[in-house]
Image (cartoon, rainbow, N blue to C red):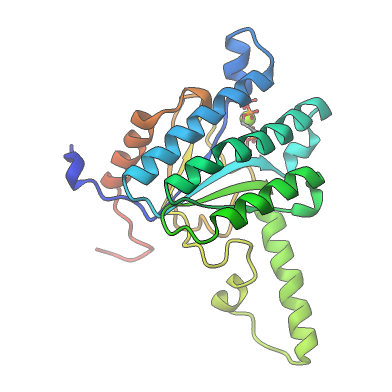
Length: 238
Ligand code: IPE
Ligand code: IPE
Ligand code: MG
């Protein structure tokens, strides 16, 4: 096993934070209790990323499909989002964290959008960790909104341009952010759940049975160690 100092950090780690509900159920509590405790795991992961110089950490916080959950859970998650952004802002400023939210904002309540905009602009000049929260996001939504805008621009330009990968990528909501090197999913589920479908084309996947509210720096480190054992070939031969 590699020593700490030898561990190579991925440029972009993305996490599908899953298992809050099951964690709460195990404690005999309501689902929202699990979401609340999950914020501590977010804090731990941000700290790990800052301490180890990881440049991009993106977190799947709420999918487009999650709008189909009971309204009380949605409301609880949205207010937790606002509360956490306000509470964490001093930490972001101290740790030089640049905060961003990516997803379908038209679906979000006004106070959430306001909180996002405030936190984004307060941290816009920070140069350390890029912390990206994927909220009201889905991979198909992203590809579709990109395709629509791409088509509109081509029509406006009045020309027929061949669609190429690099030109199309500019329209994805994640444009400018390198594709994830490592995707971690907690809670034992082994699926993408409509997350970053385009961007994860060559991402290394790491699945752990740990439920999100229990996920701490040691668990993050295990994922990084696993990543360090991978051989990335991108379809080529060694
Ligand atoms: C992840 O935990 C958080 C969100 C999807 C918002 P879940 O709420 O999906 O918890 P489980 O998977 O039901 O345990
Ligand atoms: C994926 O988790 C979305 C987030 C973690 C935000 P879900 O719990 O919604 O996914 P499924 O329903 O198990 O696929
Ligand atoms: Mg889940």
